[in-house]
Length: 242
Image (cartoon, rainbow, N blue to C red):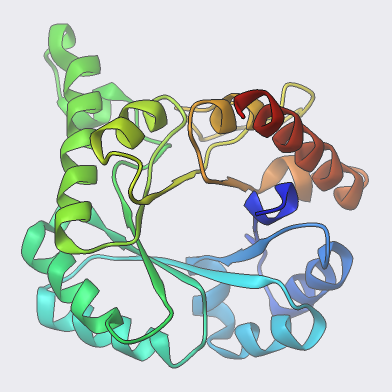
């Protein structure tokens, strides 16, 4: 895997025109475009077709499916018809739902990623009022959900950079670890709602297979240049790790 293939760009934009603009601009400089709830609800599957018309880059459908097992299985099976490379489900619904999701993806090339705990959530949101156990509960919850996803047959998990090294150890490096909440040291992000963040190089050094970057690229004066800087960081961190 080349360094650029490890970079996922979050297409958190409001409409098809903006999505196409970034698809053209960043084609060949990143490994994957992530289509999230805002864009998919706004434009539907047409946005996936539009991205493919302007780019050969992989597509990550980030819907974080979270429902009863039968509904999730059917939704995942429907997603396989859109020829996307990755799809997220939320691990909080438990083993039966994750198994149903894996069943829905069976026989396809779709890679199923289970979201452990959102990177916008801190210990207070996850653990409640007991300050003495907040940090421990959050870390343990992420590891528990990662193991659950692995046992259910998911191809990977989404976790923060703060937990990724422990997650990779817990799953014996047998499934993909995707890390969002990436903030390069040079990025200037205002009104940031991410809580558990890390840099591209630190995430890769700690074991991230793929990293998700949105605002540091999208809000940059030159998005392509920002993407290239991040790819350079990935390359350097990968070289040191090997």
